Length: 268
Ligand SMILES: [Zn+2]
Ligand SMILES: [Zn+2]
Image (cartoon, rainbow, N blue to C red; front, side, top):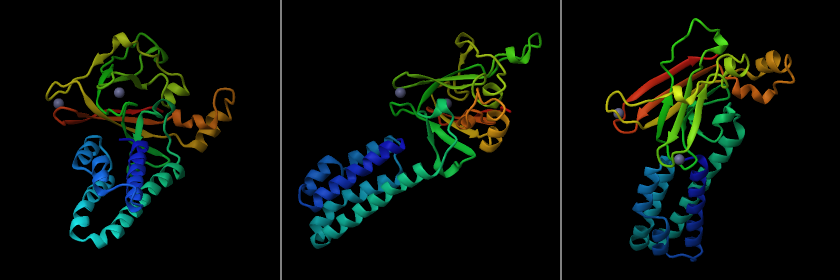
């Protein structure tokens, strides 16, 4: 579940709690709409934050409070609403204050793991715009270096992922375009899609994976000095996000949970 969906969930919770407090909804209505074990299951299956799931669980308890200690009902509604508002605020702070070096082609694909990321290093999972996080993978990881041709004519590593749910295709990485060597030095050639092979789990044979990406960013000041100042017609300062120095791709089989450190590639 991405940050936007989690924020929307919190706004719904706050709305229902507010409506309870002003008697616009009854507890039965609230349970029917949102505060139900069914909703908790749904949130868990979507990979929602544990903090929100716990909050919905406690909102489900309001029914018991109403029947056992009715004079505590209002203060409990207020407390839960305050917690939901604090959680909602934490999203704004995180999104606005930190400038994560997300490469342009991953902007709408990478769900940043804020606990492991900062302005120099990025870690996150790949999530399709439909919300699904399982993908099949086409790649040329075993491509061979051809000594007959020059380095900038070699096929670069290319990884394409297809969403299991909606089958949308994304280029996760193309060494000829992404990262310092491809983006700045124009090393490598884009491999043709015909040369790619499908990956399957070595343990169980499944073709679907959860995909995690780690990116070591290029230092922005250094990029400005070496690239923008040297080639002002080619680069702007914001391009440093596409000129990253290292990429790792970790996979977890969606069927048997076997985890593999798959790609670990220096790009500068
Ligand atoms: Zn999808
Ligand atoms: Zn497997």
